[in-house]
Image (cartoon, rainbow, N blue to C red; front, side, top):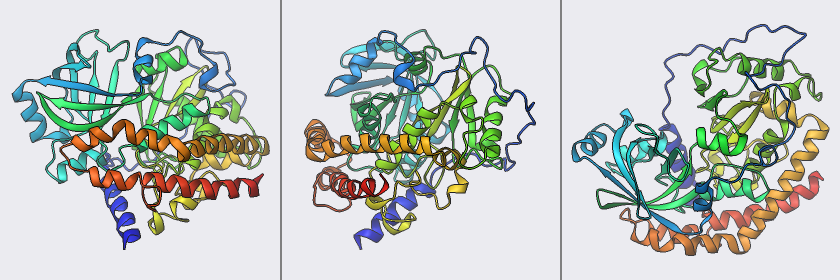
Length: 440
């Protein structure tokens, strides 16, 4: 019964995920000169061949040290009662209001504050809860930042009683030496009233792009549902978030190259894509079963940044990883989801050409397996001590969370509970140790 309930619950939540599908047209691919199928952005013509941790050597911005602290922070939102009432009355409008934000006693005045998200927002609305997910844009109305950070997303952990999956998902990338959005825990208050424990995530915007790539001026795309990178991909499935060139010529070229590359050959892939960033995204996602990522059922929750003439894949929205999804998600239960083809829920690899074409190249596949092994080593450490340390870090805050999820939280960190966060990790480690030996 628990197995059926768990699968049904997650499936129901995903059905509530919202995105504008009013435009059903496909993204049309323009014909590109065969002698030059590599697009570059202005002042960005040097090819890069390494992933995020190696191509920017700037000093860390101040907010990085804040996120590296192992503590639960306090975040207060002070907002006019009329504006808060308007947000509560129509949360799905996602309209910015002005608010003062105080973090651990330090106040940033006149920030942009609004609701955020899809499925987690819809769930809060459905149950009449005001614990919405939020976005804070510190520089919406002024030139303010928080220690150099321009945007912070506050995830309400509505579909995750462990409060851990989002946080641990990003940790997995950093554990193997690669960058990802920073995250931390916050007890969030609105006008003095505690809403609950939130996971704060560094938004993929100017400060993130500057920190990781050294530039924020180029094209940034954020994937919505069905962002398969196939020629018949719906036009609404990837939204351009940044960049002055709105022709999407670079994105169209990426799709064209993937489509035309013969299976098993590199073709022109390296002229349009930082392959290492894609391999990291695939490997970590497969190991932690990021069933809501590009390789999952909906082909979304990633970003593409066009820098130095190639696209880099950036992970996003990790709250549906480490899940024992059961029969509701093909081809197998979450802890035994195979990593051989890089998929984490999609039924047909042909529907995910980024994975299909890259992993068909022997050299790339060997690197993919090496990243899988590194991610597994981190997962083993999490099984042995990391999950317990996380429980100790946030346990008291969950106990005081007015949403009353403490008993469920305790179950999530019980290593013997089949569907819980800690129990899943233990089962996943046992499966992956055997499976990676078979694939070696």
